[in-house]
Length: 261
Image (cartoon, rainbow, N blue to C red; front, side):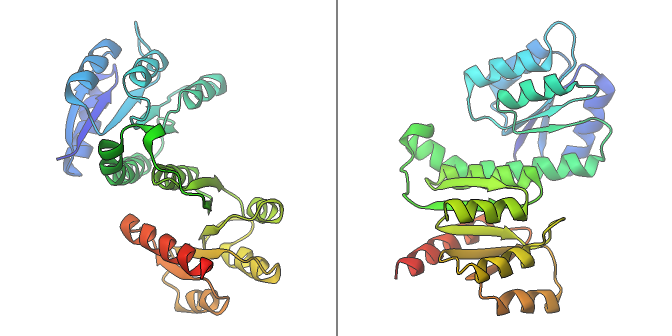
């Protein structure tokens, strides 16, 4: 069972979140102070930590600094009720995995934890087999992730980076086209449904530019008409969300091999 640590000085919040995530199948442990949270982090080694930003004695940023000293890669989601922009930037500078403002739907938080857990579980084998960061074998191939959801984009970039790819991400179709024009990546992982410039329009523009790399579409839409339109533009694969990460890795490997052929 996956361990989830919740650190929040409000006992009611702890109880509420514990109830929610226990029903999701997590083994939940809680702490109502930063110091207790750090003790539990050291002894319990949770897969994901939910960390309140505003706490007395030891606030969330201080706790996050200590966590980073213990484990530079541990997934930590900051719960930032009443946070200033400066505090949010400080949390991101400390490589908080995500920053979620209190008051948002619990569904948003549950979805974030589930996604982070999935990526974390996939990367655990790599981390244990090869050690932290520097011992990962680098692959001399680049992958551009294009997804308007920052959390999804960041997690996919991190997931692919842990597998040795030179991965980077953008949240906007037009920005993706600008990057392709400057430095074409070897493959593009492209979300179909995005505001502003939809993935299908990005795909069409890539074909007009005769982009030579591989294109993998991610789609949350089951529309046969939309999927047929996408297939007609010649992507190497279309993966339906939620993405199976093992399948994604296999597809990327095949696309890059075929590109060399």
